[in-house]
Length: 334
Image (cartoon, rainbow, N blue to C red; front, side, top):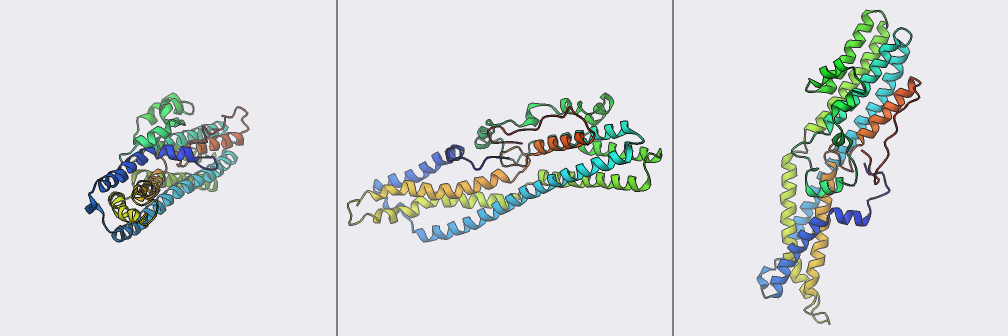
């Protein structure tokens, strides 16, 4: 997540510079050919304007859907924050008098669940964008914690050696950690360490965590529909290709009868670049938000949120050696 006031103008231009180079070439080629006498290349601008209207609608629709996915992901992790705090004090107050060791173990297992979940959500998917040159270059400005360490190194901070080996043998480690929590809770209930009401309360929290995990996995594993994404790309490409051909004659006529006659033709390059850059960049902004867990500067900061939850829950147990909060690097925090 970008934590500054805004992306700087230079930063933004650098992020889109590859598209600027390509769009400049697309604008320059028909302009030069028209100047050399290929007047037939000019086409009426009205059909292009209609196409531009359609592209504006579909790009707007895509960006709205992208923001909805991002906001839903943030709501899911907001729910995890609140549910974790509730889980912490309910568990502490229910078991600390009868089995404080189990309280500590279940707290540590919850930190492990947060860790396993964020590692799973950071796993790359074929439709995500972090592998493209534009996004990969920008990612060098900050660190993606899940790519700097391995999950087994993180989980061993919280789990015993036997449990760590067991969890690492599973495919969905977050799910198995929550299943282990449920097993521990059932044992406490059978041993009379908690009553019916306490068991019900804590179990409801575990169900909420499972629900939150499922919602996050749904966003992670179900991309923005490929049919909508594809038609947006194709229409945008057509619009970008046709804009220089539609503006060229109108801009050439702009200088008739003035001192700039014959020169306004070259205005086609910057004006076509400006129009096509706006549309292409709007589409790129949507792409930057459509996968809210992949590790881009516009994503939900799941690592920071997980660390905040751990600090809060450790504080509930009056621990003094708290882990440090995660701070932004170059205004980016993940």
